[in-house]
Length: 640
Figure 1 (tube, rainbow, N blue to C red):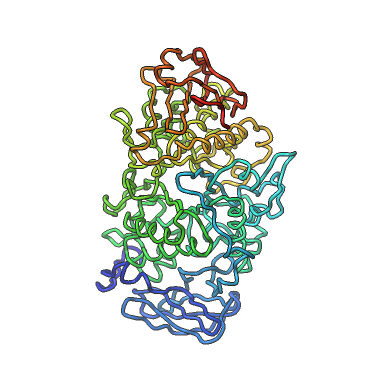
Figure 2 (cartoon, rainbow, N blue to C red):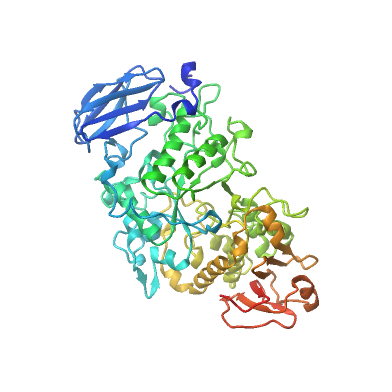
């Protein structure tokens, strides 16, 4: 009941994660028996309801037995593979199992599954990509958006399997997963692929305008989303299809990052978690109401032992069972720091190359103690990263409004830009960041939230006829900075969402990738592809330690605010990066340049047009095109 405080015994409240981390929960399947175990400390009785068809009204009912730490258990002899089950709480409320590995359509029932039977051929034996964290180039994308449009040319449009179809094209340009391969990124970050509750999973409704959602509405944390399955009515389809998609990415040396939403549950009072354990899994106010740091009605109490266990168990399930390579945390500030530290330790036992990062903010106030909130700075020396909104806003202004940033002419942002370029470490007295290590910053100018870059520039520029030059400036800044570069699907060919700043449930006409955009913007695509190739060739940009960055990066001082010029130098390589954000062509005096770089040869290897393959030597003043990013290799021939 709303506002009612629930009494949980001190014994259970005082449990630590270490005490209960090895407890097995869920449907533990063997071919001769299945054991069902669920944490439900506040229920007086709990029954297992089970049948071979989720549509059956009459189900077999078995009373479960509760132990001293609130776990109910029952073992059924026989083979229950494929059976549908729910829990009946206090003879009133029927709910799914929070530890469900899969479910019936629309998550009405949990399903007993033998996960050993769900691997595609070769999946278990094949090695995951060995992409190191310092090499991460992240591409955020949606399973549904990417291939739903007819221009994608794939058969399984908008589905997990749509991203396994190679060879897609439109009038000679590559589409679908082939576009990602061509671009050269190391990691894809998938918008939610766990089971979410905000769409109807029936295939006949898949393309309905009213049946779209990004999926930040979690229901079952261990199960893939059913609407993306080739057969939503087959509980194994969603598992097999997800694995096949990840296998295809891995075979193309692309690591997979999963977007996870542990900060809240879509349902509050009637969620499976709260029905099973009243007031335990969520943070509560003094009056017994739900606290709302998430802004959507509740927030998960990650610091409680069984909540922490749920989060870590599900993360490890995705890493172990599906070979997911990393996790992006939505509203990460609401997940307590200790849980993230333990999760990262456990995940790196499974895959040493696992990366973790998230949003270092929340929507509203949370009762979580400030020293446990993951705000910018909390990540320092903790081996995970956060989104760098300081760099984001310095580049192009606020998220949704008319405010301008450095690329649109606010050159007073120069020191903020240079701080971002230096990996947001404490570089020197003028450039002070929030990170101890450059691996801690996700460098981006947009993501799925807010206005996409093209739309932001369209409303903030006085004249959009040269919008491509501004986009190239933004791309150059994030790809030629220390830290992890991150772009959103379609940034590489001017994808627009028609000025929709919050398209979480807007139709595919707004959200989906239209591959004609790539055809129309091949200049931007090739420029982005060249930037990625260039970044990979500059080993210095792989540096993450502050001491190494300070030793290899030097900014040119006493130049115009519209110019950012810096030198990257190691024993093996030496580069000059010159960015001119002004509307006019600029020149750098040769004498000043020689004092700064001390190099015999200056070869321009990257220009406003992309990679320059013509051998050259700049012998006079350095001429920089207006609104351009330029890279010069110093002291030797063009090695690209």
